[in-house]
Length: 94
Ligand SMILES: [Zn+2]
Image (cartoon, rainbow, N blue to C red):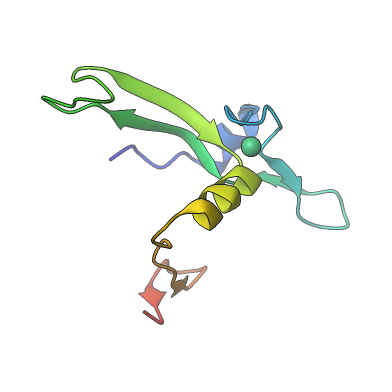
C-alpha cells in the first residue's frame, strides 16, 4: 500500500493523466483554490506468475477523475460505491 502524500507534496507536483494527457488539477472554489483529483502516481505490480502484467514489473501511473469515471461506466460489474466522512475517513452507507 503506497503511503499517503501530504497536501504540500501533492501541490508541488503537476499530475498529468496517463490516459488523456490532461492535468488532474481542478479549481475547487471561486477564490481560485485548486486541488488534484484521481489516482495520483498509483503503482500496480505484476505479482509472481502474473501472465499479463509480467511478474516483477511495476507500473506507476496517474488517471484523472474523468478517465476514472469513463472506466467505471465501462465496467460490466460496477465498482462498489459508498459514502465516507470527509473529516474522519469513516466509510458508511454500504
Ligand atoms: Zn484522463
